Amino acid sequence: MSGSATVDLGLQTIQFNVIGLTVAQGNAIGTTANNTQIIGAISCTNDGKVFDFASTQVVSLSPQGDASSGTLPISVPVSCTTSNIAIFIMIPHTGVFPFIPTYIAFGASRFTH
Image (cartoon, rainbow, N blue to C red; front, side, top):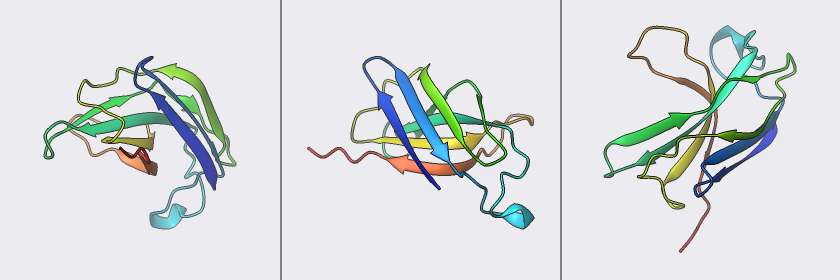
């Protein structure tokens, strides 16, 4: 698996691509578990204990686990900075709120001061 993601805090956009993305739980390890869509999401801590989240529209995921979002708008929470942002690739939720999101990839900021 490989991939990349970029968030532009000023323009409030996200862009990501993945190659060979698979789940790592249950009997579906090493497959896409028949998921045909993913979303990009960001999370930022606003006080060290509470996290703010935002997500994108759905993006198609191929049977091989490949996806490319292009540049998508995202409502970046005001708490997000270059040093406290995390990026997730997630399976879109289809259940009833509240829910625990299922993420299948993660990345954190490498920005240093």
